[in-house]
Every structure is written in structure tokens, then in C-alpha cells.
Amino acid sequence: MIDDCERCELLLQPYLDRELDESERAEAEAHLDLCSYCRRRYVFEEKLRMYVRQSVVEPMPPELKERLAALRIAL
Amino acid sequence: MSETSPQEARRIATEARDRVRFEEDALALADQVYRVARHLVGSREEAEDLMQETYARAFRSWRSFTPGTNLRAWLLRILTNLNIDRGRRVQRSPDVQSLEAGDYFLADKLEQTGGPIGEEERVDQRLSQDDIVAALAAVPHDFRDVVVLVDIGDFSYQDAAQILDVPVGTVMSRLHRGRRILKKQLAEEAVGTT
Image 1 (cartoon, each protein chain N blue to C red):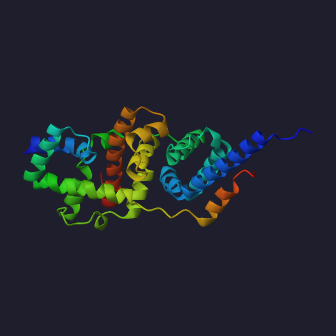
Image 2 (cartoon, rainbow over the protein chains, first blue to last red):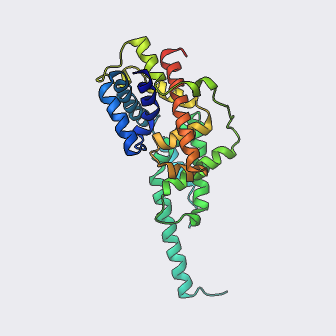
Image 3 (cartoon, each protein chain N blue to C red):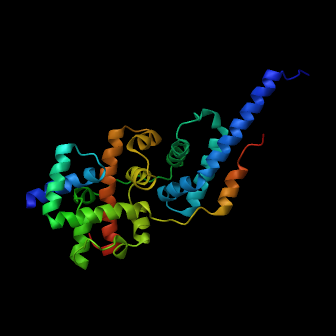
């Protein structure tokens, strides 16, 4: 399975980006159906992306918004 | 003293109305723009400075915005250009090891140190939000800009290419490499090993 797993590793990111063509997508899905090692990594990568997307920094300070509003040029 | 013609008065009134609308729309997006800015630069202070410079420039140049196009992308284009102009960006090349590490690198490391990554396991049990923020901050700028715009700002490749003024192919390759570098950094943050 090693070669297939290496191939799956290459396909996984574009698969998550929905960039694979139909035959590559089918190839990735066929391998993911059979291989629990790659399937765990698929689930992990998907969750990691969501986690990064939601990664929080402190919200914008309200006083910054006031300072931005004050930058408007008077009519 | 020349009197303003009715046509001129109407033009001035229309322009004033358009400008106020632009300013309101831009301010309504400030939280979203700040979120991206905060990930692009190293500190809250830098993000605040950058936001003020961005909005000052946006309010001055509002006429160059085309109504109906993506205002958030337009604001972020100003912001990323200013960030580059500030000259604070110390450009580091990613270390070769980061780029050679495969996409499974982080998952492999987590499994080696904490047991199998079960399908039900939540990523946040193994990685903290602080890990993510620290790891992103350690990714070299060119790569971080793309990862932040696409994976956090939710911009398309096309929008990110326009914001950064680079070809779409460059966005794709930087995204690919940037995500790998991020995972390498996360492994260092979370597992403390490379």
C-alpha cells in the first residue's frame, strides 16, 4: 500500500480544494475507502483546515473602530 | 463669486452620498479586515497601525473603488501593499526540511507522540489556538499572506492573486508550500520536535 499511500498524500490537498479532475478524484476516493491510515489523515486534514479557519485572535478593539471612523474626511 | 449651477449642485450631492455609502460599507467590513490583518502581522499594535493606514488611504482614494466589486478584497489589497511598503517584512526563506516534509507530516508526528488520530478525535484536543497563531506567525510572509487570505480570509485563488498582484499559479504554489510550512511549525509548537 506504500506507493498508493504516497500517491494519496499527493492528491489529498487538491482533493480537499476540489481541484482534482474526475479520474483523480475517483482514484483518491477509492484509496480512502480502503486505507484507514490515509482516511485518518483525510479526516485530520479536513478538521485542521476548519480549525485554522476558525483560529481566533482577539476581536478588533472597539476604540480602533472609533479611530477608523474618525479618519473619514469631513464633507 | 460664481454661483453653483443646479447640475453641479446635484453632482456634488450625489458624490457626497456615494462617499458616505462607501465609508459606511468599508467600516462595516473592518472586523473582517482586522481579522486578516492580525494574522498577517506579528502583533496587535502592528495590526492596529496597519488598519489605520489602510482606512486613511481607502477614504482618500474611494473614487478608485468600482462599486459592485469586492470591497473587502479592495481594502485588503491596500493593506497588503502597505504591509510590504512598511519594509518591516524580514523575508526568510523556508527551510528545505519544511518543504520536503510531506502533507502527512503533522498527522504522523501527532500519532507517533499521542497515539492514533481517531476519526472522532477533535483536532483541538491536540492543538491549541495559541499553537495555530504562533505557527502562522512563524511562516515566512510570502507564504503566510496566501495561507491567511485563502484559508482564513476565505478568498478564492483568483481574489488572492488580485490582492497580492501575483499570478494564480503563484498563489497555488505558495499555498501548497505555505500549508506544509504551517504544519511543520505546528509540529514544532505542539510536539516540540521536528
